Length: 202
Image 1 (cartoon, rainbow, N blue to C red):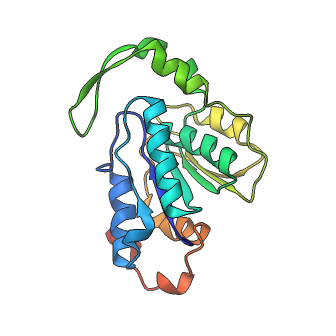
Image 2 (cartoon, one colour):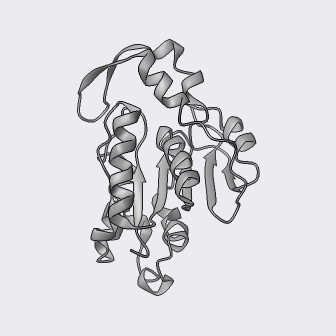
């Protein structure tokens, strides 16, 4: 369906994250709640990808909005299906940075605990794709004070894409709600539908 969006949350995150809830609130306000999917992803990449493939099939050709590890998933799916992707502080080659994280993990929202294993890391490695080259299909939003990921990795990897780099901020991406008009436009939603909305309240 046109104007549809698939939001892909990050590592140990959930649909309860601030960005997911802000996007959900805006889409509901626009009467487009059924055009949005925000799946609660399984911690194992293979099961998460199966969930995301199902959501893509339901939505047709959605804009993929990926945060952190979700940006890595979104890049793989955008390349596989020829979709547009908007990436927020995306992880680049996360499998190369998980050495110190093996073992027990806790989801920040559900409190679920689970074991990060070498099989998770291998599954992530299998999703790696060459750097995207299509600036018309990718927007990459980075904040330089991201305390979790070095934004320069993404800046290099996505250098052929449309980059928006802001000084300061943090890993959660400060000011996300105010940037939502740009996201909605990229998703193909007509400006007239949201021109009157005050995005600062979300």
